[in-house]
Every structure is written in C-alpha cells, then in structure tokens.
Image (tube, rainbow, N blue to C red; front, side, top):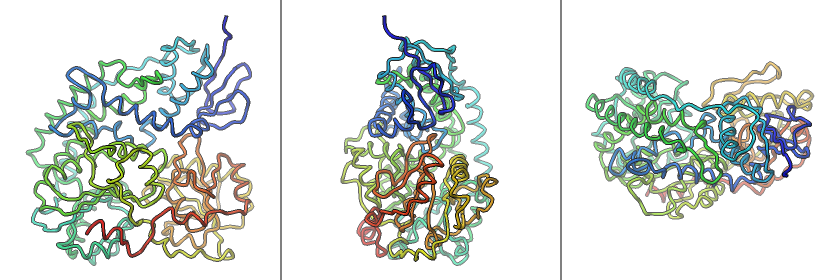
Length: 599
C-alpha cells in the first residue's frame, strides 16, 4: 500500500495548512520545509524551462490537422504562413499572453513527478490555471479535491462579427492617413514607434528620436536620403493628430515620413474577407482537436490558457488588423523604389513578419532588425526569433527573417547564441538609446540626493513595486528625495497615497542620474541597466507574479530583492560592485560599427 501524499496549491504563504504534506506556492517565496515556491523553482531551473516552452510552441506549429500541419494550413501565401502573425506564435511580452502561467505550470508538473502526489487541492483564484491543473491531475489519475472545471471551446461567431466591424472601423479611422509616396527616391527605410522624440523640433523639419538620434551622423550621409514609417502609439495623441504632426514634419524635412498603418484601399477589402474565411476554417479544425495545446512532454493541456487568444488571432479583430497590415505592406513595398537598407525596431511583433516577408518579396536590399535594448532572459519574442535563425534552410512555412539582427550588448549576443541563432546573422553595433552613457561621469556622493523609483511599462507591476517600497521601513526615515519616473509609454500612475512625499518626474533619465543615490526598479526594466552602468546603486524587485527578466540577471554586482525586508537590507548596504560591467553595452559616439553595417 502506497503512502498518501496531499499537495496543496495556494497563492502565498498565508494559505499554508498544517494538514498538507506538500504545499506549492504560486506567487510567493518561502524557506519553509515541504513548501515549494514556483517563482524560486522557475529561477533555479530557468534554462531548461525556457527551452521547454519554446519547444512546445514549435510543437503546436507542427500539429497535424486534416490536410497538413497547422503552419501549412495557415499558408495564406505560397511562401508565407499566417502562423507567424498569431498572438501565440509571437510569444508576446504581455501578461495577457499567459506565458508566465504556462512556465509555472511546467514547473508544477516537474514537482509532481518528484513528489508523486495522491491528491491535489487547488486554491487559486485564476480559473484558467485551475482548469489546466485539474485536467493534468485527471490525465495522471491523481485525486483532485475539486470538481474539474470544464473548459468550453470559444465560439467563432462573435469574433467573426468583431473582425468585420474592425475592418469598417479601420476604414473610417485611417481614411485621411496618407501612404509613403512611391515617388520618393530615398534608398533607406526606417520603421519605428512614434514616441520618444522631440516634438518641438518638428516645425523645423527635424525628427529627433531617442531611438535614432545617435545615428544622425550616419543617416545624414546616406545617398538619396531616408524615408520613415512610424507606428501609431495609442495614449499619446489620436490617429488624426499624429497625421497632422507628420504633415507639419514633411513640410520642412528633407526626408519623408508616414504612418505604418495607412488608409485601406477598397480593392483590399474583398481579399481580406476571403482570407478571414480561410482562417476561420483552420480555427474550426483546431477547435475540434482536443489536444491541440497539449504538451506531449509534460502532459499538460494548455487549452484553457491559449484557446481564447488563438481564436482572436484567427477570427477576431486581431486577425482582421493583421491581414490589413500584410496587404498594406505588400502594396507599399511593391511600389517603393529599390531600397539599399531597411531598419526596424525589433520586438518580434506580428507586423514584423508581414513587413519582412513583403521586403524580401519585392527584392529590397539589406534588412536590419535593431534590438534597441539588452534582451531580457525570459523575453520569448527574441528566443523565437533566434530559433528561426538557426539555419539557412528555408521552407514555405519558415518565419521571414531579417538579413541581420543588430544587438548592442554582450547580454543580447549571449542570449542569441544560447538560442542557437546563426552567427552570421548577428551583428554587434553601438548602442543608440544608451549612447549618452559613453562619457557619463557620476556626480560626487555629496550631490547624490535622489532615491529614484523607475516605472515599468505595465501598470500592475508599478502598483506592486510601490507597495514594496511603501512597506520598507528605511524609506520612511530616508533623507533622500523620492522621485518616481514613469515609463515613457505608460501614462497610468500608481497609487502613491502610502508614499505621500514622492515626486513625479518626466525628465530624461540621463538628467536624473547625476543626482541619483539609489535606483529601485521592477525586474523587467531595461532602465535598471542604464542606472547600473552609470554607477548608481541599482536594486531590482523580483516580483513573484512575474518572471525574473532583468537585463542584470547574472551580472556581477546587481542587487535583487523579493520582499520589503530584503529591500531594507539592500538600501542600507553601502557595498557596490558594478565598475567592471561598463562593457555590457557597446558605446562609441562615432558609431563605426553602424557606419560599416550601413555602408
């Protein structure tokens, strides 16, 4: 007779019960006996779990359905699979992607293999996670203390109507958005996001972007000039206001600028509707496949996590928008004069596959994917990109890839090598966003009077960071001026009621650093690297609800905390050890590597 082993799965330490043999904490750390912390387990086994999930994504692409594999059925061009534009395949850096939950579930399955539970009690508020765990227990003949949550396959009808409605909405919102003129004879095309630029320079015909300003000396010498297409970023200005701003810029600029998503030609509507119908057929086939999102290695069925976003990618407004992008990029790059070089800010987003495909389809020259910040360890977007660069053997379903991926740090180079990217497609170049650190001279300690809290892109991470800071005793007695700097692309401020003396600053980070004594950030912030390289004491919060994706992960001298108590200790620790790491970014104001790459 085997011993009975009860496993409880709970959110945090406060829910640990004495009658459980083993407790698994979903969102907390612990040093208690017979308690497994999933955040800690994931960190200890990060390399294996990261590769496991990446291989699972590949597995889904090769799932056999009636008529071929999934990626083959999604060939909406003879040499382009829509698979690469789905939200799942793009492995997004977004909480709604559910990737963090999936990685923790892989860790849960490994722990179950070790402890061999006979009964599992699930005490988690997230019904999707609970459904995956309950399905796993049922498949492994493990006792489950709750009635399994049945996951219904999402219906296709409602997303279908949303897709059609979104096409109509797009026609209206973009009707005045002009395309880049085909008469433009520039030989270089740059794609970026229309944020982080000096708006006061627009009326002088100058586009001073934080992303590209360090390349001014290179771009100004390019024959025939440069054309720009900019992604509209919601939350800063409307589509119409963005277009008006570009009209003002074009009036005096020697280069030409346009929005990435422009007015939709009437001739494109019917083909897009036909393509939507084809995608719905694939969605229907995958809906009828009960183990479509089942990981063959772990035995976990992730349908509850990924089915909804999958249907949205194939049937909903996301599908319509992605098909519009593909059509528009094909039309634009077909008419554009032959381009010698193309550059785009690389984040492995769905639009990049469409743009890259159209670029190569119409015979343009070198295409450079610019990774503007050091790559985070758990950023699967770049892991997916790197794996697509593993060999030069291209098939009809292969991901369209750039000619070169330009990286600006030892961190990113190592990341791409671990993911087995082809070495001849990785090029090291000077940092553009962080080039101001080249001649940085930290201020004297007597002048450092700021405790800087660096805001994150995601509002929920900011809220938890502020809670952590509020609960640190040392904060209440500090003589330092507390400054919160929001992320430039996040206008939602957290609740500061528990930290009443904090000041908000939108000043450039480079202007704040000379006065900064200590910087505190979320573990996903690339600004943490900027502070660290400047010589500022930098503390990163490893949020148990997220994965440790800090660019400082594994860097000597980097400080990480998981609680307010640890933050107190770190704040009072006067030791620093980051002098030797200034080489983590490639810094040179003369940008000789860029000049060679674009010559």
